[in-house]
Length: 213
Image 1: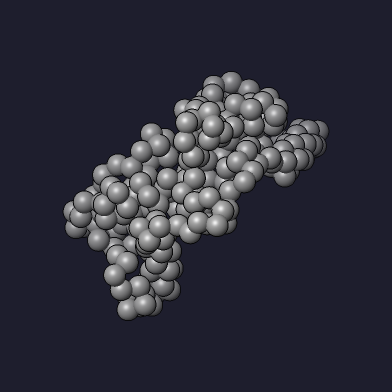
Image 2 (image 1 turned 135 degrees about the vertical axis):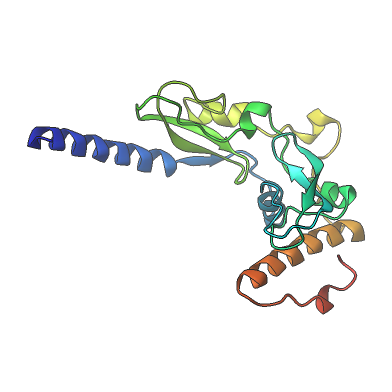
């Protein structure tokens, strides 16, 4: 490769890096009023189902971020992740606060087949934000917006009054969550701790969570 070609290639890479840095640092929250508890549950419920390395066939339920429903899968018996519930009801309670959005907003961002470096925005189901990505110029999918404002407007969470009922698992101010709802949240927190400990070669303590699993 000639020195001129190297210079052009280096310049192109530099500008691509600048574009990527600029758009990925620019994001805007769509939900706006979620509590820390709701954000924690969103992170759990938007994980992909994970069978794990073991070979058991244990019926479990996970929240499918694409269909926005709790669905059955088979758990191998070890590891996996926290999007793993023993009953359909437990899954529904734990993931009730995950924002319902149009189908196009549930898709992963796709650069496409071409090699341009066009600044676009997509809705991130995990973070609940419209974020930047680099679009190649052709192909891809519909989770691709020219401006962050267009993304926010397209993927905005419907207001409770427009849906006929509240979508939040959190009760109105001054009223605590029901014991069943608290149990669902504590169960998920316990599973996160269990997975973290198992990865460190330790063993989770079941005694402090007795009766929650």
